[in-house]
Length: 98
Image 1: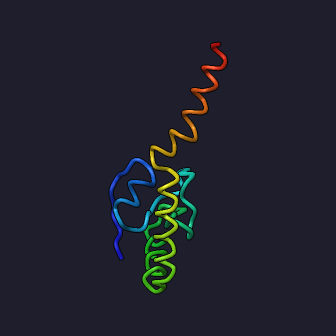
Image 2 (image 1 turned 180 degrees about the vertical axis):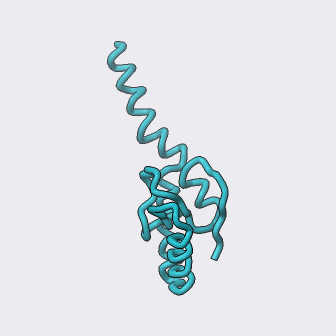
């Protein structure tokens, strides 16, 4: 099982790392606990250790989290973010300016 403790700009970076995304409960809207990431709710390291051990004991769950993480990363790739969020706003600005 690969875990990376690195800083990335969003979930596409986590997916590029090839591991399971691990994050705190600081509002990352893309991290769904147990679905596409390990999300700790407290500052207690035992919480992370417990989540880590659970994944080590359940390889199928680990694979599912990795798959879901990669799918989430595709949705948040910069090209997708621009297509879904930036371009519609630019169209609105152009329409209002006309």
